[in-house]
Image (cartoon, rainbow, N blue to C red; front, side, top):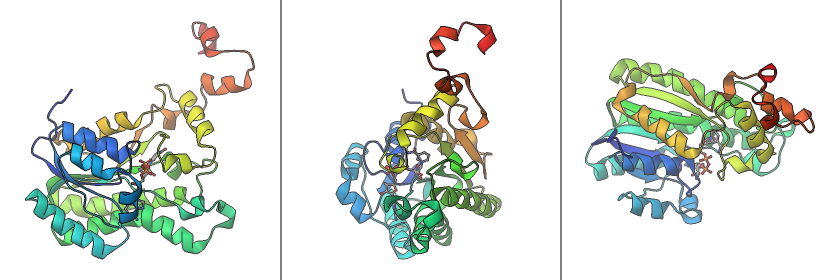
Length: 284
Ligand SMILES: NC(=O)c1ccc[n+]([C@@H]2O[C@H](COP(=O)([O-])OP(=O)(O)OC[C@H]3O[C@@H](n4cnc5c(N)ncnc54)[C@H](O)[C@@H]3O)[C@@H](O)[C@H]2O)c1
C-alpha cells in the first residue's frame, strides 16, 4: 500500500547490490511512495550484483561511483542532479565493508592499511558525500540524509571487528555534519541502527546465524527485516519527520533496550520451551 509519502521528491541511493540489500528494499519502497532517484554503486558491484534490474524496475539509471573517491562523487552528483532535473530531497548511505573481516584478520591482529580502508569505505564516505553535496549545493532545504548503522557502535559484539569502530565514526559524522547542514539549510542527517539482516555484508560477520538468532530472542518484537527497515527510512525521508536530526535511531525490535530476555535465557534451560511457559506469569 502506498501513501505517496515521497511524491515529487528526488533522491540519491547508495548501496543496492542485490535484492537482499537493505538499500535495494529502500529503493523499491521509495519508488512505491512516488520518489524519483538515481542509483549508484561501485563498478565492481555493478558487475557482480543486479543493480541494473533494480534501475529498470524503478525507471531510473545507475551512475557508477566509488564512494571513497571524491572525483567520482563530484561526477555522480553533477550527473544525478542533471538527470533528475533538480537537487536531492533525500540521500541514502547504505555502504559498509571491512577488508579485515574479508581477509579473516581478527580485532587483535588488524592490518592497519585495511583498517584505513574499512573506515574510509564505511564511515568517511558519508563525510565525502555530504561535503561534495554541500560544495555543489545539491541537497534541497528540508532534505533528509539517512545512513545505516549497527548497535556494535555502542556495545561490544563478538566478531563485529573493526566495523564497530567504523560505525562509531559514522554516527559521529552524522552529528557533526548534522549541526552544520541543519543550521544552514534545515537539512537533517540521521543513522538508522538496524537489526542483523541476511545480506551480503551481514553474512560476512563471524557467527552471523547465531547472532541473528540471539538478537531475535532478545528483541520483544523480533528482528526487524530489510523491508521493515525500508518502511522506516521512507518515513525519515518524508516531510513527517522534519525536526528529527543528528540522531541514532534504533530499528531493532527493542533489542538495544534489553539486558536479558526469557527467550535468550531459555537457551540455557534445556527442555524448557517458551511456549511451555508463556502463559505462566511467574516467568515473565
Ligand atoms: N546486514 C546487517 O546485518 C546490517 C545490520 C545493521 C546495519 N547494516 C548496514 O547496512 C548497510 C547496507 O548493508 P547490507 O546489509 O544491505 O549489505 P550489502 O552488502 O547488500 O550492501 C553493502 C553495499 O556497500 C557497497 N559498497 C562497498 N564499498 C563501496 C564503495 N567503496 N563505494 C560505494 N559503495 C560501496 C556494496 O557494493 C554494497 O552495495 C551497511 O552500512 C551495513 O553495515 C547491515
